Length: 225
Image (tube, rainbow, N blue to C red; front, side, top):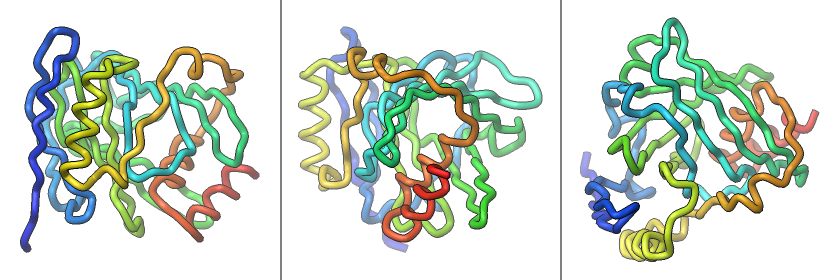
């Protein structure tokens, strides 16, 4: 199978450091299932907070996502999430914990989320790239999803304008710009919504991001019940 991989060099200055080079996949030819084999999970290096900077596709149902990674895990890996859900027009700030068994998938940075409703779906996330200090790039997919999900995570809550301009220029050059959206991370917008506990909301939002039309409507109704 012929594969076209566009290599983007993110060489912008970030906290007075030069960010490493990495591969940003084109949405039209990228296959997260086949093209990403996983990588050894290094919790010690990956631990701490990661802020979502942007995503593919453009579905605005979640903002201000922060993923907190622990330094170690025993039987299960617990990721603590904080985000604002805007699904259905209802704005709520959510804290949630998702668990993954420390099996061979998790140990190779492949994470499975299970949704069990009238429609059973598995969403898989994989780490494409991380330099541990600045940026992590992940992809996600579900069996019937029309497009892959891609998330760009940063150690910094907000990027400087020079970094944003550089990334934007690369997105335009690669043709990914029309599918990519910047996500909200400003403190004035991310700390104002009332905090609500939630169980299982994150996977519903992930489904809403991945799916459109009929499936999106199904997920939206399920979340609002």
